[in-house]
Length: 396
Image 1: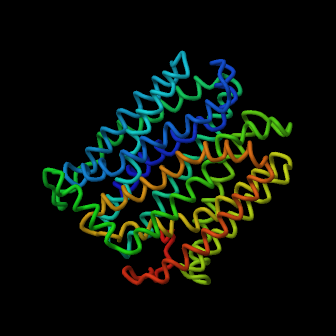
Image 2: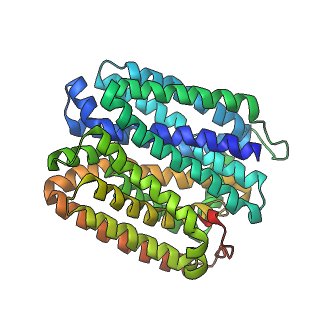
C-alpha cells in the first residue's frame, strides 16, 4: 500500500495547485491592477497545457517509466508555483501557470495508469478510490487554504504555501516511488505513438467517454473562477467565503465515495451516470437563486456528488479502454477533461454577459441533465467494454 500512499500524495498536490487561483481572482486583479475577467482566464492558461501535455506524457510514461515522469513533473510544478508567488505582472504569472499546467499534466493521469499496472481489476476499483480521495482533499485544501491564507496574508503567501507542500511531496516521491520492473518499456517513436492512440480510439466507448468529460469540464469547472466575483456582486462574501463555497464541491466528492457502494448496488452503472447528470444539473439551477454563502456551499456539495457520479464511472472505464496502452488511454481521457476546463471560463464569461447569471446557470443545469442521460444511453448501446459488476468505490 506504500505505492498507493505516494501516488495519492502526488495527486493531492496536483489537484491543490489547480484550485489555488479560483478563490483569489479578485485579490490578484486588485494587486496587479488588471480586470477580473483577465485573471479568470488563468484557469484556461493552466488547463490548456495540462490537456495538451496528456498525450505526450502518457506515451513517455509508457516508454520511460511513469514514476520517472511523475518525479520530473513534480519538480517543474514546484518551481512554477514558486515563480507564481513572486510574479510582478499578470504576464509572468500567466507564464508560470502555463508551464506549471503542462508539468502537472504528468501526475494524476500517470498515477491512475500506475494503479492500473500494479493492481488487478478486482483490487483496482478500491485503489482508484483511495487516489480519488487524495485528489478531492487537494481540491478542498486548494480552495479553502488559498482563500483563508489570502484573506490574512495575501494571495502570494497562499501560493508560497502551496509551493512548500509540493516540494515536500516531491521529496517523498523521489525517495519512495520506484519503477515497476514488470512493465515493458520501449523507446517511443512517432509510429508507435500514433498507433497507441489509434488502439485507444478503436474502442467504441472511447468516443463516449471523451466527449462526456469534455462537456462536463466546460459546464462544471468553467464556473469556478467566477464564484468569488458572483459572491461579491451579491454581497454574499469575499475570499474566505469563496474558498468555502468551492470546497463544497470537494466535500461532495467525499459524500460520493462514502455512499458509492449503495448507489451502485441500487442503480447500476448506467443509471448512476444518468442520476449524476440530473443531480449536478439541479445543483447548478439552484445556484441561480442567489442565496447566502453557506447555502451555496451546500449546493456546490450537491454539484460535487453529481459530478463524481458521472466522472469517476468514466474514469474507471478509461483504465480498460486499451490495457496494452493504459498510460495513453488515461492520458487521452485527461486531455479531454482539461480541454473542457480550458474552454469553460471563456464560455461562462460569454454566457454571463449574454444571458445573465440566472440564465447562464439554468442553461448549465439543463446541459448537465442532458449529458447524464445521453452518456448513459450511449455507453449502454456500445458493448465493446462490459459494464463493471463490482460495487467497489472506485467504480468511482
